[in-house]
Image (cartoon, rainbow, N blue to C red; front, side, top):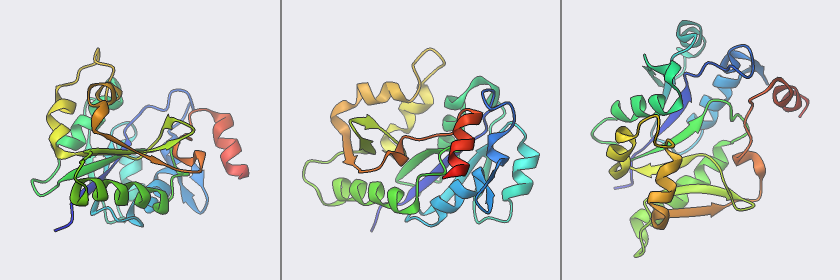
Length: 203
């Protein structure tokens, strides 16, 4: 039995630094959110969950033809942590682990996602020294996607606005992390500002 891993895209944010919903900005032949969804759908993930909030109806209309599950976060204005918690609460009982990806990371290809999935499965299914969190690392910097075993769900749900968010778990469970070294900065790159977007379009 292979581990069932759900992919979670956090797409509920306000995009305050961009000034408009970056989820819906044109990217390639579609939009940023569709590109991230397609990268996840093209990987070995067992399902894709998209957390929506800000401009939910527009985003829903854009992505409803995709084979995904949408979860609405009513507290999206309170930040990304609430979206992660919303998704974790929605996981099916059969889900063993979940992979977190941000909606503004269209550079993370299906192949990069699979690298982390394969490493996670190797560490949890076949290794004697088990590691229950896997994430890519480029130049000693943590990237995405981050895969958590289901055992950390309660920790994530217990976090609050003062906790430092999900990053605080990297400190708490430092010994549980398997770092997957990659040779590209794609796992780090996101699109926060207009200049990030324009640079991405040029590429």
